[in-house]
Amino acid sequence: MEGIPGVTETTGGARVSVRYQVWPVADPSKITTVTRDYATAGFEAPATLPASALADGQSYAWQAQTVAGDAVSDWSAPCYVKVDNSKPANAPSITSSNYAPETWNEGGEPVEFTLSANGADDVEGFVFSWQQTLPVVGTSIGDYGIPQPVDPYADTTYFKRADTFGGSTTLSLVPPTGSGPMTLWVRSQDRAYNRSDIAKYEFRVKSTAPTISPAVPEPEFGQPAEFTLSPDPELQAKSPVVSYSVKTLGGQEDRTFDVTARPDGTATVELTLDGLYNEHLQVSSRSANGWVSDTAWWGISFDTTPGVSSVTYPENGSGGGIGVPGTFTFTPRVKDVVSFTYTFNNGDPEVTVPAGADHTASIDWSPATDGWHDLTVYATTRSGLQLAPYDYFFTVN
Image (cartoon, rainbow, N blue to C red; front, side, top):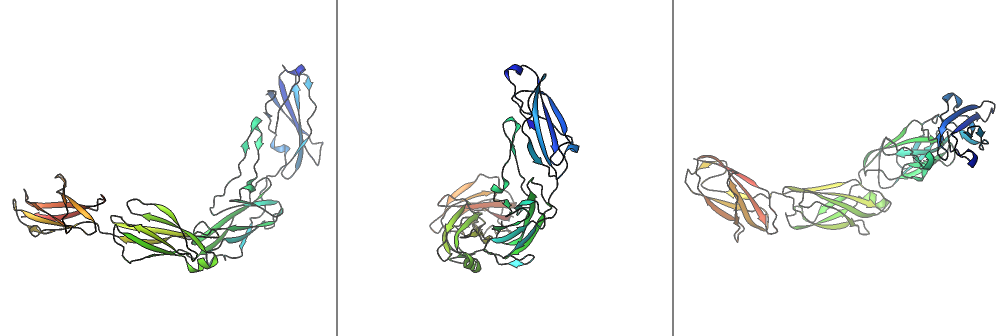
């Protein structure tokens, strides 16, 4: 308990104490008195009651007075408090009118839950989350150490007040993911924010992922490609899809962006795919009622390495000899290649040669040593994009 002592001009220089007394409302004769000595006028002077002075479930009155030397103030007007150290007797009950437990449900609409105190008549409300660890109720401390209580039920993301003490309430929640097993965790709490044992509601949601359809089955590397995004039919029937979230993975500049859907729920997006090895799209839909679908995936692999060939020094074979010149021809596997860069044995300086009118290039090379050799080559496009390297192995006789 805490009070702020005050003094008058006649007692202003004296040391002050604060005396507190508390008694059960049902029996005013059982007074417990505690004192905070060495208090400072104008500042809080907290004191601690023995645990034996307060019984769970009982209401108490308490008051305070300032003591300054021989001067004693009047007692303050009584304040009242009810002690509640007991959690609600029962865990809440949870039901849903549109998503059956322990089975697969069609998604596309918020889950309608009813939370009930389940016979615990002191329940004021409920705390709930899709995570088993539920948020706590916090209280900040203001001037003079005075707590600043907050109303947890103002945070409708996690808290909901019951319609009456010991009553029930309803929730309309969009699951955190578009499909799969789901669990809602709930505790009830009384006015002192004591919480009940936890209850859970488990159910499963079928996939509502959209469809990703490329205009051509195998889009070309580095060329514009059109994709049509289509909603899950049952999802669209429940609430129209209004937009899509598109994420690219594996490209030169991966990004995430939104696309507005047409009235029929479809959308079209044009992308230039430039992943050196592969590229993927992740797409989810958002419905007018707030439902976010699970993610659809589409991917493609590209071989952007150049082709390398030599008659004199065949790949993974042997030929030629020390000082015997050989011609190596570089051929692009993608469009718009303007040059090739190569190095022998990963130790020689890199050399870049331009591609000819037929987009190929050839070099002549004479080995200084026999044995195993490695030729590494990569192509560069007109936009300056360096493509994937290729290692060509051969043996010099």
